[in-house]
Image (cartoon, rainbow, N blue to C red; front, side):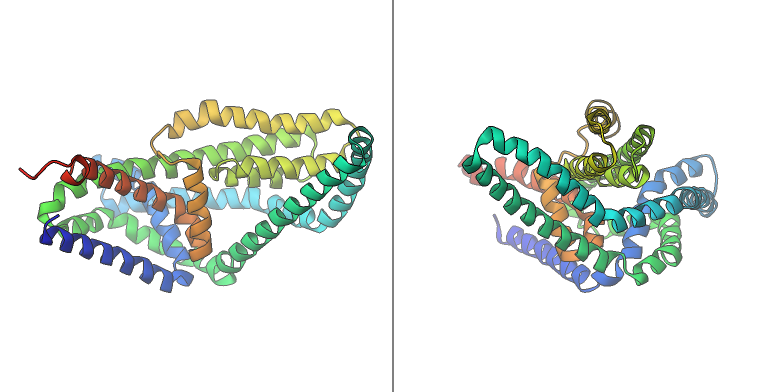
Length: 356
């Protein structure tokens, strides 16, 4: 690499590190702006479509933004009150559910001891207790951090009052913002930056729009299915499982464990418990074979392990804002890494051939 090339790399790396540092320093107030940015990005194609029919962008922004806010308010008025009631009741009954579940598992444990023998049963109990304690401690710490940093009163108020304003101005001026960024791209790198921007846009759109519909569809499926079975707290468990399903395997597993815990306490027969489990297995089958291939496909191009790491790292560094932006940031980073690897494989450093 030439001296000018090394200097260019140092400049870009320095700008990236400075941006990450600046975001970290203001992470406590980023929440409404991050949500407004995500909303503007999702709604921008609808405003663009109206603009192609001759509708002024400010008017298209008002129409699209107004429809979105009305839909959000309607969903909040219809879904949130029973959801909050069930969530509060579920949290209040957790000690009772845990005690009843422990008593029921004792009966199962006695039957297992008779089959395995005292030594093997003791080893299995020690293994389960140790790992369940580790998982519970990690989950409690993560949830505590999320609640403490992301769902504070300031963020809740700012989400209601600041996010709509931020979203409106970003949505109205979206093309001007993109044009201003493009005008400051070095001319010698413009073609590469445009190519990367197109690929990033495809992957982000695939995740934000496609995965968002997948999560909402799964939440509705789980909530309706569990309600038909007659499970207590079906709405809270179903919506929670659907919304968390953007984390590979975590949403389905956590929802399955929670619903089975409630089912084992609520239902005296095993048939209802099996039906509850079948609801989640059916949801996973629909997600894997219909929803994800149809709505997301391979546009995101992220390995599940990389997604989980990105979410944990983003949540640990930036709190709830990090969780909100972790997967989009991972998608962008994945595009940059693939671009760098392509350039590396085409270089003399990889091929060992002298410069022409």
